[in-house]
Length: 270
Length: 270
Image 1 (cartoon, rainbow over the protein chains, first blue to last red):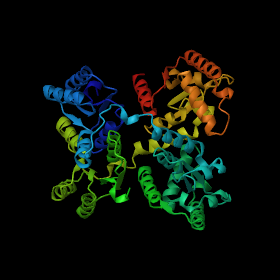
Image 2: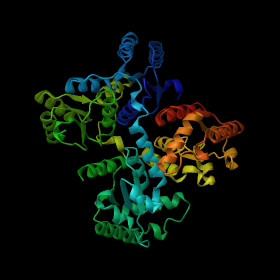
Image 3: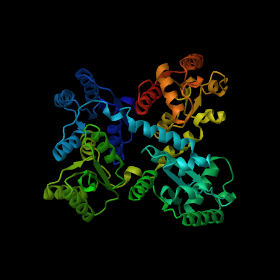
Image 4: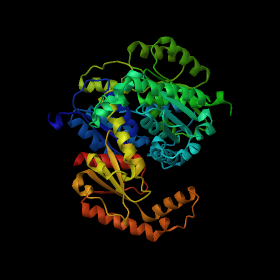
């Protein structure tokens, strides 16, 4: 297909356009469109920049999604949308209005606030670094510095879960459960409120491990991916969680994002 | 402040509510609200569940943001909003309508499609694992397997950038530039199109490193955080990028998300 013929969606933002793109992508999954092009235009500050985007959207028969907070730019994009008969979706406007109407507050209308280099931002960056450095329990001493320690056998999705939770600002460490290795004493020291044990359906784990072996060019009938071994590991893990008094979460059939939300809820309740 | 007095925002989703929460949080930054409570209600399937959320929102004087795709649930939440006089913000509706009107396509209206365990999902999970395992150039052999290699001196934000890009599905490796270490031959092998060199203002890096030393309980006047050493490292890095023919990106004053978008744009252009 010719590049110019792709379904064209422009994102026009006075910040980086991350929020608008998240909504576009979530919506895209509700359709079967084969070929799409998403173009981000960021740090928009002038009406000329808006006209330029809108002309391209018009020419290519697409639509635009925007996150703009300054009234004159919001007005400019609405006018261009009418003039060129192009659909323009206001991603943050209705939500801002709901805040104003519900809480009687006035917005700051400062562009680019979405990714300010604030305290919260640095906390999240630090948490991601912590999670990367403490993946797979490399340094048991770090257990005492963590906000949360995820326990689980190999391939139960500890790494991506740790990273996802780190993005929320939590210093997450993950520790691999292996029947042949005695768990470190630090796990008892930090107390069960900072622990979460992951489990999964044995057969699903067998499949995941077999895939993993294949992708590594190894025979997939190895002990590591056998049902007996997997069941033994999962039983051992469940007993360990019980003895540590830590809550258990079953990740079977759940996406990382979904499990992460469950974990965040548990933490809030503690 | 009493918990019940917090500014209450409910998120009501037939999936996990990740998209709606992203928009709520981006909007929140435009206001000065001191105390807010965001409650996610996910995997919503029935009108009763919707009534329950809406009653709580009404009681607590808040509003609701929703991502629902099934027509009967969308209708139910709109009716409850009118009945209880509660504001309900439809996060995906206007975007879905723009897709329908612009591309003449019909949505699937299948709930929970946002986080399907599809190919794209597994690719992203794999990319995150790759980035974690190949942080700080632990295994130079992996350079040849990467989609992108980030080069940079210590504390230039290689790790969080790698992870952020990995969430977009890119297998990113990062490699530390140190004047005393000869760069591995693999960097020349993969070719400049897969390389990005990071740089930063010397004084900003001095501050970042001094903070780092402090947080590690070390004296911040160390050689590592001296202006001379930092300048020497940055000069060495710039010369290396030039000899490798790889593009350079200045991260000074930029948030991770912002730098990531710049890198993604560069990759697309190549």
